[in-house]
Length: 424
Image (cartoon, rainbow, N blue to C red; front, side):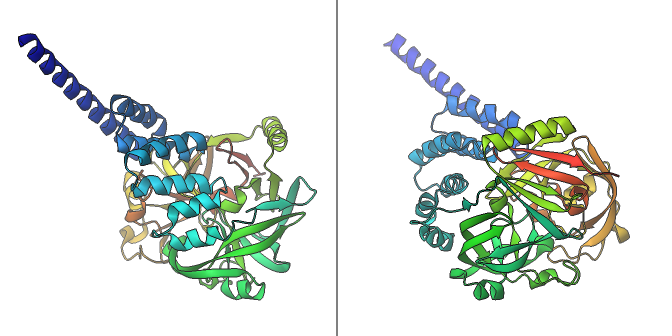
């Protein structure tokens, strides 16, 4: 009897020790994740799961980390385990939906989102059941779209449902966006609206969801495209597009279906088919040209982040958002303090909820070994509530005035970006 009691006490102590170790691993993992140290966080989450196979937070976060790097099978495995423990876990469902969305598995996304806060998106994706989304047609291996303008933001000419239109290239945007009058004129199918979405400079607009039959990009045509329909007049055609009527945006989700290069020095958008052969050819070219290769991660359906620094600040995670017209840096308030950025009038009087940011000059912005100096910047459009909006700390945005010096290529399969600087 005594030996049995001792054994039970030992087992209880062991169980308590394992639980304590799991809690410690989880705490360390969460701290690393929130700081953006993903490679450090992942083995700690794995340790927490090894110590407690029902650790829902660790399972969900492992799925999130895999998704940040487009490791789809791994993401699905962790998130499926999480949902097996708690089938109503909203966060795990959302992450699993994002995993499926990046693979164009629209029926699965619809089933995961149906009845929730993204029910409108679910109904839109249900309409693709008999269609192949993002179906690329044409005999060419790549398309070249000349910029109609480069500054303060690139604009290209496309054909949407056979109608000519002028579209901004914006990696801060998600899917393709259409201006409402243009969408109506070209016969885009609209399912409904009512959702709010955020845009550059703190702007929010009501968005309708719809579907575009075709988007012709030089020698390639993309068919069956989900679109957001939103008033684009707020960007100001005179200030941003120099009098050009903007009919829409090309966002990251469309670019994701190609091996794209936004080549600012050559003033063109290059869209290569996503094939192993095209990637191999580009990699050989990049090696010959000594291009700089940097990792990036992607949150949500399109938010690209990488390590960068500005002024005297330490390297931090920044959004790669090329759609900031006329600015190279949009820091958040925390980074402004930490980097010792001196704002005009001490930053008084800015409007963090709107477009009236405080303009200043960024003395330097660096991505890896690449540095650009004395670039226009804006404080205000990236308020404090956005800094932790993805669950990890974001320092702000690196945008157009930095990237305009480079040919910027994005490899969404390898989660790498390549930068080749133009002539100084």
